[in-house]
Image: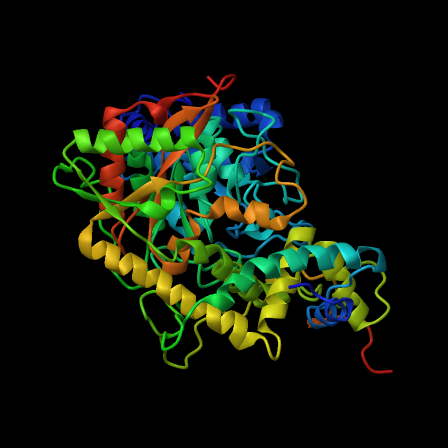
Amino acid sequence: MSIERQEIEKLATLSRIAIGEDTITEVSQRLSSVLELVDQLQAVNTEGVEAMSHPMKATQRLREDEVSEINQREALQAIAPDTEEGLFLVPKVIE
Amino acid sequence: MHNLTIAELVKGLQGKEFSSVEVTQHFLARIAKLDANYNAVITVTADQALKAAAAADQRLAAGNAPALCGVPILHKDIFCTNGVRTSCGSKMLDNFIPPYNATVVENFEQAGAVVLGKTNMDEFAMGSSNETSFYGPVKNPWASDSVPGGSSGGSAAAVAARLAPGATATDTGGSIRQPAALCGITGLKPTYGRVSRWGMIAFASSLDQGGPMARTAEDCAILLNCMASYDDKDSTCIDREVPDYSATLGDDIKGLKIGVPREYFSEGLDPDTEKAVRAALAEYEAQGAELVEISLPNTGLSVPAYYVIAPAEASANLSRFDGVRYGYRCDAPKDLNDMYTRTRAEGFGDEVKRRILIGTYCLSAGYYEAYYGKAQQVRQLIQQDFEKAFEQVDVIMGPTTPSPAFKFGSKGDDPVAMYLEDIYTIATNLAGLPGMSVPCGMVDEKPVGLQIIGNYFDEARMLNIAHQYQQATQWHSLTPEGVA
């Protein structure tokens, strides 16, 4: 199946990836090629087949709600692009 | 010294034939001298390595050295290393220095291993040729115009070129087995849940699994002994005793039932590659194993199912790279949205962006059931194929890849041509089964891999089977030109 330009723009917004005007056609062609591949799945009869979520049917473990990690704010913020007084800085959101 | 196996290095170190500092200096010198030819290593940690080697020598002298004490290894640059840049092959993480170790890294540290550095890889492990790395492609030590495979191409090439006796790697759709095959080394992807994923940068969480690469099955057993562990920090890790993988290597394989899937020998398989794999099967017959023809009828659906599931999970996992807490941030963002969209557009390469977009598409409103839901059902069918097969046979064998290493750029612009490279390896990831690749021949002076697929948690038997083959054959000890 081929994917329309409008759809690419929507995907770009949803995935927060800027796509340049000059590359939209190319991106669309390549995505269409991949979708053509995965569309083979549509022909498979999967009636009554349970969707697989873990190979050994394991479920998520639970643990006691106790503090298990020490506070490492300084170490974690040392690698951030921009911080101030222990906070992560981003461009102004509200005028 | 670089031609010694890990088993031999362990023996020599424990027997004080040479010191860890000597071994470490030797491999560091090789990396410095030869890696310009391969581009297999992104970061060399010479100072830390020599310090660790000196400490290892003290423990060796004191006589209380752990299993891998003083043995140098390389880590794939997907495993977080405390204080050492962990790039995942991406511009996005080019400046990322983790403040903690992955569990796998921690396990090797506890075992006394010496880390020489971090290996090159396809960006975020997305690729089968190492051409998507931000740091440039790795060259195959057997043919400099050909790919080493991917995504663990740096680890595979480094081991093949004797820049390290062993390396860690990860496998989401074939990323350990395919480069192992293309570089003529031995690699094992364990059962999903056997090796902790904590601190291993996530690509597709229901498929990702770490594993060892080395020249021999015996060495892979030694590395897996250290790598496999139960870890509370990985919620999908399975709490199950880790056997001594070295203990059963010598077991007799007489009477072993080997399943040979029809679908792995069909159209698309290079005839010379098939010949090499058939010869390996004949060697097993000669050792007393029985070949049983089997069918895995849904094999053809594994690539389409994978290219829904893996991108879907990747699109969720990679949403964390937003320029806020670590990694790349674009210059002079106008506002928050501009910062997100430009950081991600500039920080990710084309293949990664493509997979995020595909994944976003498959998970978006109105498409979820038709794509992700459907793919997870097909995944169940693929697993059932294997379940049925393992009622009849002990292991399954076939080619690891359809052909030997291909040339750079030869898969062209169509991403699907590259995706089909993993046609024989993807199904085991979807089923969560262990798989390995063992060198079994040469075609046009390039290595061919035999794939061995085992039942859940049957790594010990797979390593035993591979070891028995390597006792009778020499393919694993061939050396690329210019390496010796």
